[in-house]
Image 1 (tube, rainbow, N blue to C red):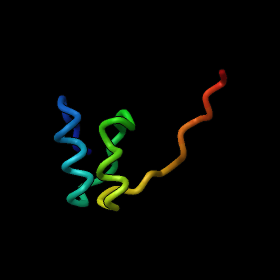
Image 2 (cartoon, rainbow, N blue to C red):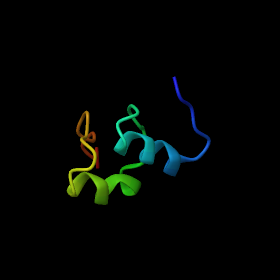
Image 3 (cartoon, helix red, strand yellow):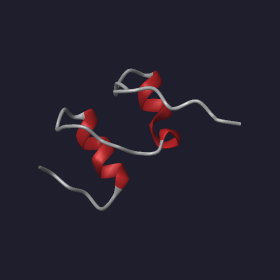
Length: 48
């Protein structure tokens, strides 16, 4: 298992097929919309 102290490194590793990255959706939006990453689940609805 790879572990990273920097979220950007984890995201880059996931883009390059090295596994799964868990990160705030704000940091993943562009990669998700450009299909470089795939969401494993949808965000929970806002309870407000």
